[in-house]
Image 1 (tube, rainbow, N blue to C red):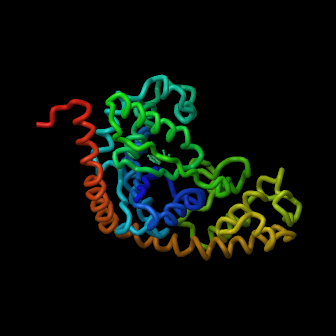
Image 2 (cartoon, protein in one colour):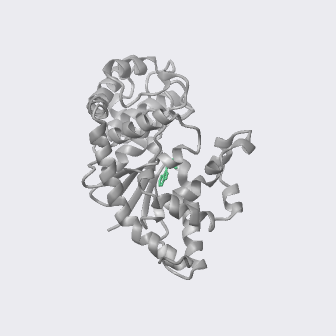
Image 3 (cartoon, rainbow, N blue to C red):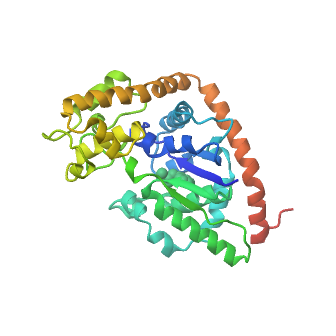
Length: 332
Ligand code: TRP
């Protein structure tokens, strides 16, 4: 069976963008693939994280995945640091990947900002660790957002160079599964920027733990324009906020924009916002409640992560041994 690996960073609150853009797709993929879903805490510390906050976020993201419907018995759910094979393979890949390859990574340039001299070495080597995440399990498919396409290309380059340097066919070239452009969720305050945990305005995003009142308030305050909703998708052009709210409505009801507009086109925003609130509350409400319940039981969460980590390691160990053998390390 094909094997999926994907990762999510335990930084900040989970929001609607994480849910529609990644987590719900992960839920849909279980069963059809053997899935490893990893909370990538090693990646998180490439930027400064307060230790207590990192711990809480790791458990919260785990709770979010389970609450959203990922079954930790049928899939392998774990945090990256519990399986030492990620960091182990990443070191080998540090010696396979070329400086020139990493120098082209646009995300490093964005995240390092102006003061590149002060960025951590880990932030620079981030894509090598991501390649190790995937290849330690010989994963064949990787669901990622558009922003991770370049990193996945790099993982393929690393796999290929390793195979050719050591004249083996050890690593499969992992295929990206680019997650729907259609489910790109934008800020509720600005339809041109992505919904993000780092936006200073709480009104810009719906968190998965928001209750019905918060959801209603945030949707009511969402930016709109003065026109009623168009009846066809073409009418959303040049109206980023309308497009975003329709996109969210369509994604939550699992419809295309066209089909969504067949139901709500022509409405005034005030009425549409009530519809959207009801829909969002009906789907996110139960997830948020379950998440709140689960985070109160860190013993359960940690048990899931521990068991997931053990299962993950059982898959990666033989791969690492094969790599070490090929590289020429004596394994006495
Ligand atoms: N870099 C990814 C992100 O920020 C997270 C990630 C880490 C990942 N390792 C991965 C995604 C491996 C897919 C496969 O979204």
